Length: 172
Image (cartoon, rainbow, N blue to C red):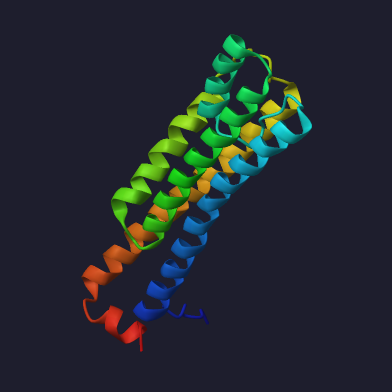
């Protein structure tokens, strides 16, 4: 005798996707935090390793380094740009968490561009093999989480359209 699979109620399915969306969107915030921490560690330790930072900033820092060298001005620029870019990512992530599709798509687009840059091997004073592989791994994890967030968002919207009164019931 075959057992029938019990179907999940729409409320449970809705809540499951809302929970998954909230977790994966907050996971995207780790990219901004790691960028700021990684670049701050670079300034404090003066070790050539931007593995935790965004590749777009790494390219920009290498161009700035070529023109002014490893000076106090360079360190200040690294900290200020890292803080500004991390704040932009954090701002967009917080708006994405509030189910703003434009913010989620903006974060995904920025991470996608940064991930593409991560796969392009380039040579500059801050490159080493271990930091390159670490950076690739981090980018793959974060871009995967962003697509899970987008998938969850789409499922929540679909369920809300199919069951218009579901949202009111799930909030009770």
